Length: 180
Image (cartoon, rainbow, N blue to C red; front, side):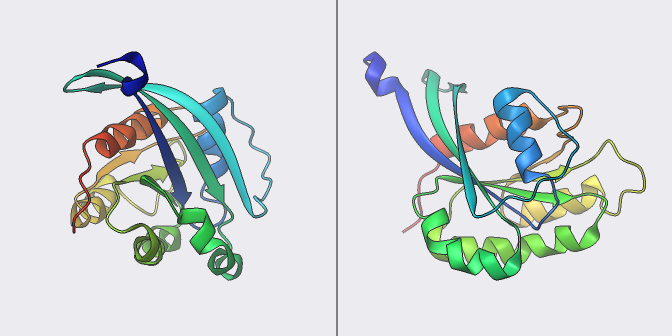
C-alpha cells in the first residue's frame, strides 16, 4: 500500500447537552490543555488533529476533523443536518455529576442516526475526577452495550482516558462497515 493510501480522512462529532465538557475534551485532546472557565459554544466549532491508529494491516494515519456543537436543545435542531452530515463517528458525552445529561444521550443518538445511519459511537462519562457522581461506570457500560459501543470514564481536567476515547473511536471507524 502506498503512503497516500494509508491516510484516512474522518469526521468525528461530539454530542451531548450543554456544560458536559465537549469543548474541554476537544481542547484536552487537540492541545493538551484545560481551562475551567466555561465558555458556551455558539453554533459549531471545528478542530483538526492527525492521529495514528493501530490497525490489523498496520498503522494508519487518520486526519480527523472534530466537530463541537452547542448543546442547547433549541439550537441543536437548527444545525442538525449540516453538523452531522458525513460524520464517520460520534463521541457521546455526558457529565457524570448530572444524571439528566446521561439520560439525554438517548435522544441525541436517535436524532444523529437519522442523518448518519449506524456509525460507530464511543460513550464518554466526563468529570470522573469530581465527587458526588450521579452516574456509574455500570450505567455507562449498560448504555454503551445497548449500542454495541465502547465507553470511558474520563476527565478533561486531568486528561484521564481522553486520548483513549478518541483513539478507540477512530479504530472502530476504520473497521466499520455500514449496514444496508
